[in-house]
Amino acid sequence: MGLAAAYRAAKNGHSLDLFEAAPEPGGMAGHFDFDGISLERFYHFVCKTDTPTFDLMEELGIGDKMRWRETSMGFVTRARLFQWGDPLALFRFPYLTLIQKLRYGLFAFICVRRNQWPSIETENARKWIIRWCGEDIYERFWSPLFRHKFYEYADNISAAWIWTRIRRIGRSRRSMFQEELGYIEGGSLTLIDALCEGIRKHGGRIHLGEGVQRVLVQSGRVTGIRTAQSTVPVDAVISTVPTPLVTALVPDLPPEWKHRYEAIHNIGVICVIFKLSRSVSPHFWINVSEPDIEIPGVIEFTNLRAQGNDTIVYVPYYMPVTNMKFSWSDDRLLKEAFDCLQRINPAIARSNVRATKVARLRYGQPICEPGFAAKIPPVQTPIAGLQIADTCYYYPEDRGIAESVRLGSLMANSVAQGAATEIGVTPLVTQAGVA
Image: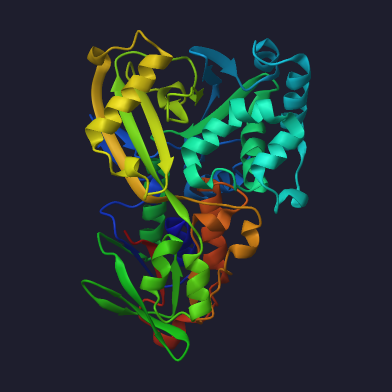
């Protein structure tokens, strides 16, 4: 979102400085070298409804880098791996009655077809799913995912947030029976590099490894930003840092606004990544529902974006950072994650492991409870020239590059034209991430 805002602001003619605390740009879409492969720390995929991504790629001259691939979903329960995610798989599943299958199929169909569903914005997802599908289906398919992602928040997640996730995936299909997801050739880094090139082409400056420590305010408006290295005068600031960091970044905010940011809860994310010499399954993603496995699922990324003969697998953990597992050592997480892979495919052996990586992020996912829309502060703060948003502002949509592009561009376009003449030195600063 920070890169998208910076690119749009620079293209709109503003003098632009982007400050990023990390040594590389891109935030959650940033890459690292994984045993010779340029790979995202946190897996990304593209759906057919992600129009803002496609439009930006065309604008940047990389529209031809979009690739599509048929993908599938699996489901592990009772020590068996089942095909999942299409009507035929639902019909063949042995542990549901015909009535249960019909209810679940109708639920999925309506979720995908509906464009708006305002009545469920204040409804609890657990109650909503049980009302449509029955308690047995909720306990078998949904409860393990909620419990192993949200922990103490599991029973108070917004139904609207869950619905939009079902809809987005459900609309990325070639047919009723075939899911089709996309990826950018070269990964998210292709888009990140193009955005950085576009920012510089339009005169913007990018400062990596230089996090903003404070937004400076005088007489109710932004006057500058301070980093460990410098103080920069500005006319406008767009901040895309996680909301838990906002009050320290902008101590001049009114107390009631600070309270609103602090009231938004987040969970952390850990991705355990394996490079293997053999495949785990034919599926891109596998949901896991086993009573003794505390992992919600597995992403076999190379079933979307191939990497020669290598298999790349992400095992994601979502949890509040106060959970003791978030502090586990890398070795302990790697062992548990590998044990899960062996449960899915007993033929996987330690000798198949070529490389491993554990990526952690403290603020990976906002907790979107019922009525969450009313909880989000406006993007424009009461401080003139200061806009603030993070991934919770995508609600009811989930985190994704398309939403980042959409909101980042909107924020940049809303900066008042002509404000640059007031100070004349770096009139717009985009703070893309403070860690």
